[in-house]
Image (cartoon, rainbow, N blue to C red):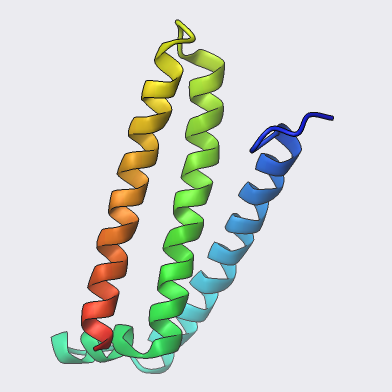
Length: 113
C-alpha cells in the first residue's frame, strides 16, 4: 500500500465520514429550525451566534470542503492532461476552498463576538 498523503482508501474514508457528519448536522439543523424557527434577522444572528451552532456550521463547512477536495482531486488526477497542469488545477481548487473557509470562519466569528 502506498503512503501518499491521500491514497484511495483514505480519500474514500474521508469522503464517507464527511458525508455522515453532513447528514447528522443536517438532521440537527432541521430539528432546531422546526423547534424554533428564526423569524427575523436578529433571530438568525442569535441562532448562528450560539457556540454549538457556530462550531457545528464550521465543522459542516469543513466537511463540505473536505468532501469537495477529495472529489475534485480524483477528477483532476484522472482527467486533467498534461500531468504538469494537475498541480496548478489542484492549487486553484485548494485556494478557493481555503479562502472560502476562512471567509466563513471570519463571518461566524464576527457573529459570535
